[in-house]
Amino acid sequence: MPAFAESAACRAPALAVWKLLYDPTRFPDWWDGTGRVERGPDGEVTRFAEAWPDFPYPTQVRSEGTPGGRVVISCLVSGISQRWTLEPHPGGCAVTVTVELPDEEAGRMPAQRAEVRASLDRLVALAEREA
View 1: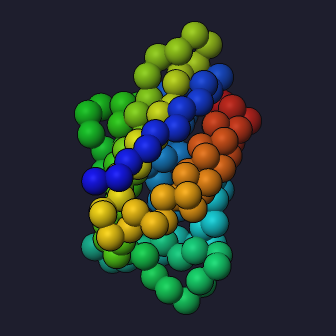
View 2: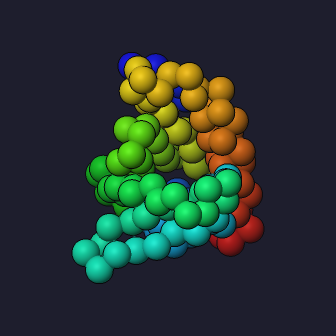
């Protein structure tokens, strides 16, 4: 399974970053290319990209461990999974995102890497502003 990881240091506490990651309504604030997010009656999350505003991406968001630890975001259409991990770092936290793509999505690796890098930078900047 193709995969890659990106990391950044953040001056905000891990809990501040975790709150942005775990709240899908905040995705448009930091997730590059996200136009809007809708929550269904059963808690399901649907993400809409700016480039394809009428194409829904059902998305699963779950926490692993305690708040402030790890958030996994999975696209239920493509099977691409993002595991966001927060660890202590002097003056804040370290944010690492590991992305796994199914073999049939391997051609999307360069676009995914660019989207994730931009999203990571936006997430860190937003968390630092709001902390």
